[in-house]
Length: 190
Image 1 (cartoon, rainbow, N blue to C red):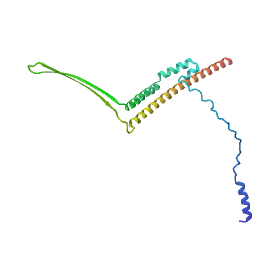
Image 2 (spheres, rainbow, N blue to C red):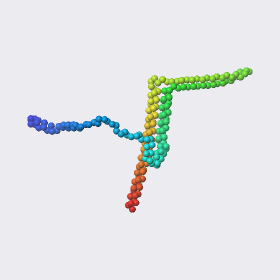
Image 3 (cartoon, rainbow, N blue to C red):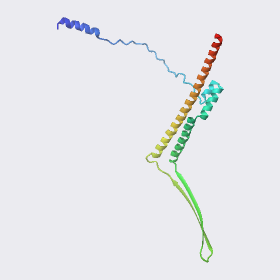
């Protein structure tokens, strides 16, 4: 290869090389003090659909909430989880016990008077299991997590049901308006 070819090849290869663009320096003027912007607002209330002021929507949602079997099942799951949580918490407490009994016995020997004897007893007990290895507190923590999970399931089922009823209601309202507009257009066309 001649020196000429090497020079030509070098010129061609440098034409294919790419160079990164030079960074542009933008002037930064950060504010002297930061402030917190407006918050997201108030949390949505549990009866948010009442804000629309539509009595029919209110009635439909209330009816759906009181008659939905899936929502009733999740409400029962919350009650069961609450009972399990109470039982798990009770295992950490001492157990008190009391017992009592009375008895009466009569016997009659041949030819002798009747002999009656009685007895009574009373007993008290206190039991407590030390949670040395954390088994009981772990069971309570698990029951608490189960309870919270069932509450979240109930809240999600309730929100989904209400949103579904409200969405269907508003779709129906929109369709009613379209029907009214179509009727008016038909009347105007006649």
